[in-house]
Image (cartoon, rainbow, N blue to C red; front, side, top):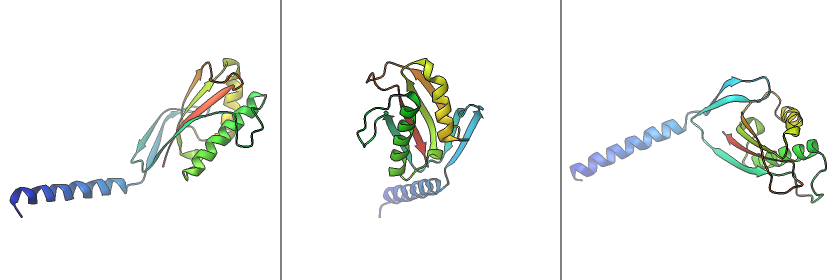
Length: 149
């Protein structure tokens, strides 16, 4: 074995050991300045083992009963869809670190907050709410999330 190859092999082995050691450390989540309204100003994640990015979920489910007429039922349907996506990834709602909600109208802010708090309880991920022109006029909201484990 030539000298350069030996140095390379030792450096590679060391970097592999460091990477393995770091990846074996548990994921740590630190909530920065959590508000009393079910969100935090920021969320610091250290050593995530898995990240899941859930696409914007809409108020339609697999049973093809159509879009619920009222906002609260649409919101619950969306959160149920999010839960199903997280379940498929072996994660829970408490693994969510970021929520982005798109509302069709600002008049839904209070109802959105109420259902979010009902669903998430004391869990307070980082949060953004955007008033937007949503893809389908029947949809009153769409929510995407990022989860870590």
